[in-house]
Structures are given as C-alpha cells and as structure tokens.
Amino acid sequence: MTSERRYGRRAFLAAIGATATLSCLGESPVVSSPSPASTVAVTPGTPPPPTVTGDLAIYTPLDDAVTRELLAGFAKSYPAVKAQILALAAIDELDTRVRVEKDHRKADVIVGGASAYHDALGADGFLTPFVAASSAQIPASLKAPSGLWTGWYEDVLGLVTNKDRLTRELRAKTPSWDDLLDPAWAGKLIVPDPTRTDAGYVLIAAQFFRFARDDAKTVDYIKRLHANVSRYVDDPAQVVALVARGEATAAPAWGHDVLADAVRASSLELLAADDAVLEVGAVSIQNGTRSAAAAHALVEWLCGRDAQTVIAKTGGRYPSRALASAPSGSPSIARLDPKKLDRRAAGDVRDRLLARWREAVGRARGWARPAGPAA
Image (tube, helix red, strand yellow):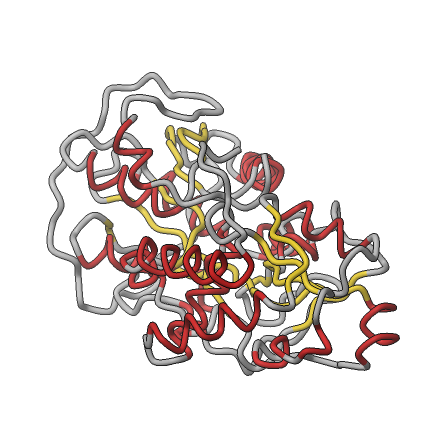
C-alpha cells in the first residue's frame, strides 16, 4: 500500500458494504442525524486527564506506518482509551462514507485529509466543535474558528529532483510549473499518472485554478508539459525511486513521499516554488459520538508535541504547531497559500479535467492508458 490514496467515490458507492479495515470495533452504530454547524467561535478546553476511558473508531486517509505509530503514541498518553482504525481510504471516499452513514454513524473521528473536506462536513452538520488546549500553538489560519476542525499538519506538492542531474543539466534552483515547459526539460521529466495518483491529478488541478478555471489554458499547459515527459508512472513511490536512481531529473511529488525518514534518499531534493501546492491536513470529531471525552483526548494529543514529531519524521509532513520541527531537508512553505487549491471544486471537475488530459496526451503523441482497473 502506497502512502498516497487514489480517489474512488464511485467505486466506494458501488461497494458501500465492503469496508477496508485494520480492525473493526464490533459495536452498534451510532445513530445521529446531522445538526447545523456552529458558527460561534469556541474556547479551548481543558486537556483531558490520562485516565480518560472510551472506545474510538477512526477514519483516516493516512498510510499504515504513520497511523500505527500515531496510535501507539496516543496509547502511551491515554492507555485507557481503545482507539482503532475502522477504515483506511482516500479522504473523498471517507467524505462519502460519512454522508451515507449519517443515520448509522460508525466512526467517531476523522484523522487527516484535506481540511476542505472537513470544512464541508462541518458546514453540513456532520461534525461537533472542539478546540484542544494544545491547539493554541497552531496558527489561526490552520483552524476553523468554530472548532469544527483543526489543521495539525501541512503537505506540499513540489518538485522532487535528482540534485546531481539538475545541477549538471539545467542549473535550475527552484523551477516553477511554467519552467517545466521549457524545451530544455525535454525527456527529463516523469509525471505521476493523473488518472491513478493524487499527485498527478493535483498537478493538473493546480494549473486549472492557476489559470482561473480556464479549460483552454489548462489543456494548453498539459500539451506543452507532455512534450517534455518521458513517462507517466502509476505509483508515487516509484516516481520518487526513479528520480533517486537518476532515471529522470525531476518529477512532481507530494512532500510526504520524499521527506519521510523511511524513504528519504541523499540524491534527492524537494523544491517548492511560489506556485507549489500547499494543503492543510485536519482532524475532526463526528457529531453524535458516544466517546466524546476519548475523542477530545485524541484531538488534544494530535495537536501536541509528540504527534507533531511523528507526522514530521515518519509522515514526512509539516507539523502545524508553532516552533515544531519540519521534516529534515524540507523546503520552506511560509510563502505558500493553501487556499490556492480548492479540493472540493477539484473533485467536482475531476472527470472533465481527466478527459481533457486523455484527449490532449493522446492527440500529442498517441499515448493512451489501457482500460482496466487501477492497481
């Protein structure tokens, strides 16, 4: 299982009864209808004592290694809470799952995934507000004033480069998306397949929003970029490995696929130009949870120092807590604006943009992905 999960809303709806689980709680579902989202700012709560008890069912889009380490750390701080993963899935699948389960709630907390999804769930009444005391060290721009979600990490879609090749062949320091259209990049780029990877699709969506949602300009960019692409790759981990081996000079990639301790390579450098994509990862509590104290404890812990260390080292993501250390070798993200990528809108135009991509790529070189299920 790679650290990046594909979109799959339609696949999930077609197979809603099949739940990908690490472990199921075996409890009766929580029955609760959505209530209107709170628009009133709430004040931080008192940190829950270590003696808090309860069972927690968690939905998360994070990869197994990060999730397991986070739960192990949480268990040390709150040993009386039984926290288990009910489902691992892409955040849009989890968004769909929560909405489908509105009258038969199964999970208590959503851990990770783009804040835009948490924000939409909160606006539609699926979340309950809570402001952790430890979140005081998280900038206001990374939190919902209502307390319906808290951003506890950030991730960046930048350019992973082979340092030697970049210096030798291009002498480029921090290429922008437009720089990649230069003929000097011909044959030196690999790109994650946008039909099968989140990184590939977000690359296209980033251009769509950068060009003020202009389809024609987005298609023109796709065609010009394609002229410099040597291959499209299905697996984001393979993308990083190919660049590390020097089989390509650079590739678009999420920071967590490059910066996590387990995958970091000395030959690589992650670059983030001013048009790089920044995303806020959030945590939220579902409305109607029967384990409110335990859920509060988990949010409190995720916003604290220990969890922020895990998400940086094992997760390869930027902790949102002030003064917490970013992953080793990570580029500065201080100038980047997460609002430039609208995840919900990107999901709405996904089919259209991918159709444009297939048409543009096929017309440019006759390249087409064979039909069939994704790996």
